[in-house]
Image 1 (cartoon, rainbow, N blue to C red):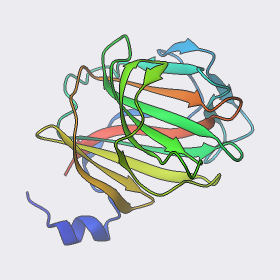
Image 2 (image 1 turned 90 degrees about the vertical axis):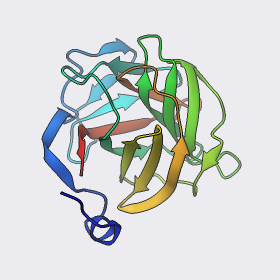
Image 3 (image 1 turned 30 degrees about the horizontal axis):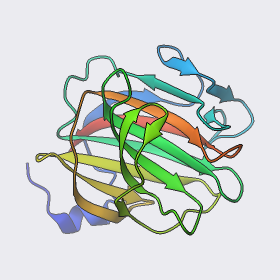
Image 4 (image 1 turned 120 degrees about the vertical axis):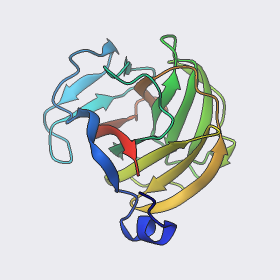
Length: 194
């Protein structure tokens, strides 16, 4: 069943075909490979959430049962730390972390956007960017489409469209960046895009 772009926009990028294929409510890192990431019982949307800071703390997982990310959406909530904070949501990666990530950045001289990654701790500067992010909770969605290309939504508003990517696998991950100021992730889901 086809749904028009106008209807998708009215739904705020939250339309789903069926239920979640993967969901993490921020209460556990069970099944994830973890390097420094923790569960934060005090902060969340609602609490708890997954905390990744300071720099180079991360966790990653190959969501069980997902063999291809084309036609899928990844949706999550993120709250960055104080001024200068950065955090990253990896997607389409192999077990070594090579793939893509959505970099979330508060700095005015380094905008958030889509980056290429070579490991869970190494990446390029985003080439496709959008406006600076504040320290409030925001909901993001990455729609992975045939091409492969991605659309990125922030709080129901499309901020990037048809960005060309390469998928190296189905791993997703979260990481802290920017010295002592990373972020908290909550309500991470993967579902079939309508």
